Image (cartoon, helix red, strand yellow):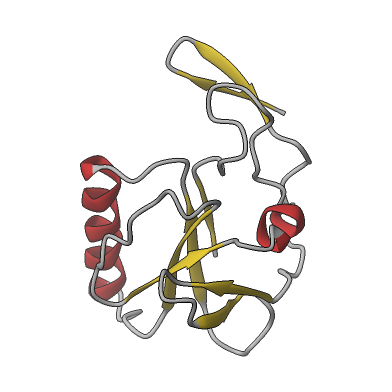
Length: 129
């Protein structure tokens, strides 16, 4: 699968998880190595965002998502921002978990890791519900 980023064409290493497929439970760690799980079927709604970089635009979009969730009485939705490497800094957004895919299981199961190149090894920007 190809993705356009600025003037570059990027490719995913795998095919992303398809609509309707059950998500895999994956253990991630935050910057202080505290583990937490995302995915799996735990009986509640989860919203997972992956990104190759964290910038002001992403933080604004996450705030807009929070607003939409609260307007629709979905505040209890578990939310996580997931990145591929420790190069990223936790933006510390209230109500959002921050996870690093240290053992690469998330990228493998969800199929969003970019091939080597401009953003190689990072995750494509994606939203999983």
